[in-house]
Length: 451
Image (cartoon, rainbow, N blue to C red; front, side):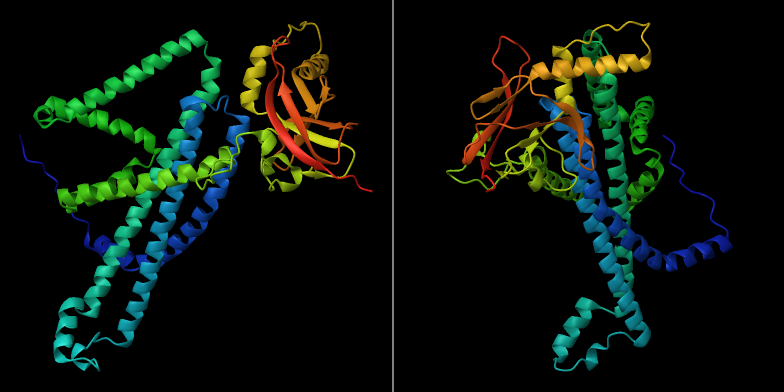
């Protein structure tokens, strides 16, 4: 096999000088970029949280199985990446600021550290410090190199975050937009085919990676072509990613590379696991790792859930199932908002079939008839119980709630059986007239009449 020729034409002297000038002045750009990145990364978790809540309520059609767990896993991974990015850019910012201070100190004292003139130390201590610390200018140079390495690693995490976010967008579009449009029988075939394709791809890539196989020129060429197909996942950032990674690979020992990958992998998995456990409360606020022996949140009627009371909901927070005005009500009425998430819409679409409207009807008339029909169907599906009084056909209105314009239904009840003290309101769904209604939630509250 012919030797690999990596020689490239040298840059002209004027371009080499320009490159040295840019390299010498790069530290101030690093400080600016690191500061701006720190500010931007601090904004990302809130934006990701809002996007996740919007997706959970308006897009996802199921919260069970792998499809239901995927959004939370992707959200936790991107959140973990934000924290890692913040630490990387913060480390670079602190190290580079310290480097600037040392450069300024060297400008004031060009001779650096004069160990023989350090007071309150013996000649032995002075020699040991000189051997251990070395000259100030060499330390400044080493610190500059480490700052550059940390900065490059931080941008590796940026590119990785972009790749993860891009892959998640693709999966989201496939699972939530394209998947419902495909008939179930064809969807099953496509799912099995995609699983088989990925299994074959991994198997072929693994076999071609064996030393005895990739020694063959044809196999090596095929392996390279399969490997470079991953560039699609980087959304146009594969070239900068390759430059950074291959620079490290070509200068670091093989063992050091494996050790660094292992350490980063373990740390990142731990951060993702911790973030995933913390984010479970965003899906279900009852989940907590700090449990008590005689404490349970499993029964709605025995748990005061802040997400069920309007006055306890944070701004921009979605109502999980239903909410009333407060946990302590002084008025003789109950104002109820019932959430209408996309996963409930999937169920109602199967239970209630839309009639076929006449093509001769104008569009405005079709919309009016559809609104009346949907309201009529809804009145027969939802059931509200206040203590022992049952409202089988509550008079519900379509409504939007809060700054996030959450879609749902709204009604006001004036029950006559409210008792001073604790009361309960239960909201149920009657998908089958013969079966027992399915309880969506039970909200406890206290009625204290305003005298």
